[in-house]
Image (cartoon, rainbow, N blue to C red; front, side, top):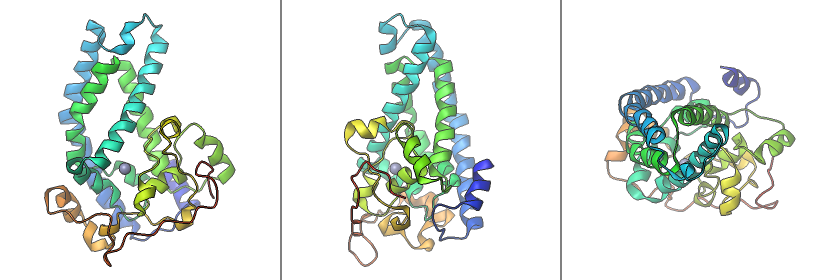
Length: 270
Ligand SMILES: [Zn+2]
């Protein structure tokens, strides 16, 4: 609610589609996503975290860590393994079919944070289960991470224009709206950057941090799906299951040109 009010008062990017249509569509995705999480994911991951705790499974149980440290490290490692998962959903073609639905949104705001195809949430359950068991994620660490992640994704998808100086400071630690806006650019090389969902540390470590694209230059979406007719609710829901377009190519067949780089990749542009 607070974010939505700020998005209206200080919009970061110019919006292209009708706000009402887009947000209604994204809320349908949010409803289906919530149902998938409640019916399929929660019954698997919650008991699994309990089992991890009882049997002391996972790397973090290799040490006798104080509870608070164990929970903190579990949240940090969940954030890192989500970075890896995000790269996978872009790189593995059948996973990209589902994540594509999140990226074809033609504008970016807090409602995009909830626009995930229910199939993407369903296929991520085995990965989530593996994260929990491999890391040693306890039930309280899982809940803490899920809540922090929700706040983070609502924030970095939002269309709020923060003063660039403030955003530069936040981006040293956490993913920000301008930073994630670059990941949603139609330029493929820009999409292949800023994979982090919480801490920016992972993009820094992997050399995938890219901050030098001004938001006014960013066109949000996927090159092959820029016509609003391509992203109606029905077409978006069916998207993973039908014939796939060469997503990098515009209707005219070329790839979108790269933006000129003014500053070093790691310095945030207004
Ligand atoms: Zn993505």
